Image (cartoon, rainbow, N blue to C red; front, top):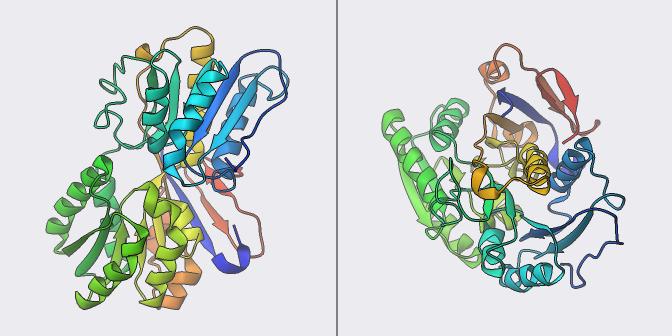
Length: 350
């Protein structure tokens, strides 16, 4: 995180714990060999990758000693993923970690026999990755960000921070089934809260300027960004455009907030990557993906950029500081200190 650009961020932990152009190649290690396929860059995935490696270490796997990991990064060029997945299969890895939804289909098309674990997916049933959350079937399983009423909760929090909110612009990618689900939840909450939604279908970053022009014409009070890998990859541009038009941004992930967005609310993605290591461990010890239920999150993070709030003239209500409830602590991130979050009384690096 660039400290001079982010200012002060507050993290609340809620609930209970639940290639570059040349591919990365690792020195041989005794033990299993797993493939790691990501649609993003190594830099963009650094925190989650560190969490995954930490999870493996906690289970006794030390990279380069008793486990080898072959990393392949798409660098936000999704068209590269099929070739990278096929390369991992040719390397005869024992298992493929398909990091995030865009990597799942290329991995499945490359192999229907090697186990595939996804640390983060939207709706794995809707995209045909698994038969059901309880009984995945096939060779794929992992963790889903599906959770009840996330869209509604985000709107409720935004309404609390922007009391005069009456018109909300919503960016969504129509080809993303999970985004469509979250949008439906948001629509239900909007009716209950008396907020008028202006939905904007965006399929490419080239459409951002036009979308923001429409928001201005519709006199939107704030912007909510639906989950989507294209939006995530272009979050710096989105946040910059929102700042230009003085629009508070509610987003699914903390990285939008670190880029200068106002708020983010969603599951702890590094936590899910860390948890995915347990799936890798179970499968390497003989478990079948078909028999390992897909997990859903029970822990969520609310992240607020106070520098952005100040720039927008927004005063954060004190009630947000106690949202975590009894037994949870508030972690503070500032431009003079390191980034930390508190989970159930334990401060740990993200």
